[in-house]
Length: 495
Image (cartoon, rainbow, N blue to C red; front, side):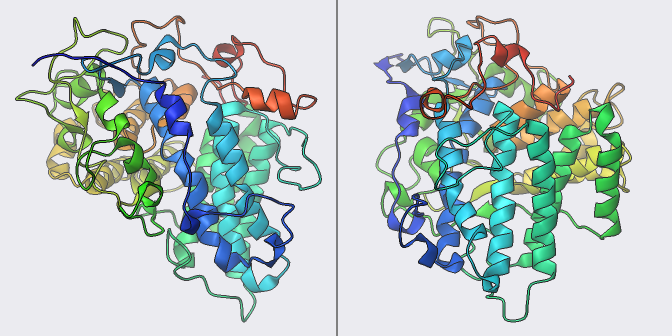
């Protein structure tokens, strides 16, 4: 194959420039004279889908790069993901994650603050989804504006401590479930304006319970938090809480009508399914050698059928790039993002997968916080990953890995969490890469190599507040140095 090069402008910058069509819009201004007149049933769809436009792309991409799942197509492009591989993290690095998620969750706050009890179910959904995104703000940055967030008359909100935010988020989820359970007679029903569960409030309760479990597990490594964690898990058990058994997917009516109406992940990383040309993200992004060898039997001695759904083979063999290498040494037939991830413009977006739910339950059961067989929950999580990707052979794969150290349950002779985290990494590859990186910072699993061009000896443990915060909220944003991204851990991180 002839190798040719095209200089690629910063893909991160390109990904940050997006617009939105009317059906995905929310009212971003808290000072708008009409905002209080927009009822929650009219605002809910946009309030849910708008932050997802960022979540599906930037954090997902960054996590897949940090966890050595995705690499740069060095055969055809130069300069792709150089900063991510170098680990040159500063206040300009992926700043749009903070900026976009913080801004676009305003729509959820507006719904929560709507002055009417007639929309309690809509408000409960807004609480749950806002909690989902604010957990990521804490997990990625630490302290953040929370108690004063989105106040129209306070453009410089104070920062709350990360742990206090976490406790507040747990309380918000409890309040959301209570609102659903005790919705007054005549409460406006949620229907098609809900792009996730189409008004199935039982599923929203499952989402809330699963998210609460993730918050609690994240903090569970702290000895000082054990009484609190145990009490909260006991409360979940006493309430008969159920957890997600199916994927929480978002789809407000994605289509190929124009770029803004496409699924945002597909709009960035899609191939030729229903468009004239592949997206730049698809062409520039390929599998890493680490990902391929973890799936094709080289690393663990077991072939994983999900490989053909996660990546697209080019030629007659699987090949991945070493992060940071150049075209001189890279194979010619690097594998692209696969058909289990890029389907078409109208494909569903994944917010919280059933696979992650079962892996969380497995860890909670392993630690004794909930009842259940941790091995069975672990293996169900693997099967759910197969189902989501459209892969076959899940039962055979599960049987074949059971005796494999670090990959299967019985064969993992050390910490069982290593098997859970390795399988979670595979299950979230391409779908929610940032979750895998956050879990790595918490547990140290799975171990993956740094890029050969890395200028630091270890992966970062957090991101830095963006420059925009130091411009607009300078008196409140915590001071940081570049080394803090590698040394100052988020409060729950005792790894």
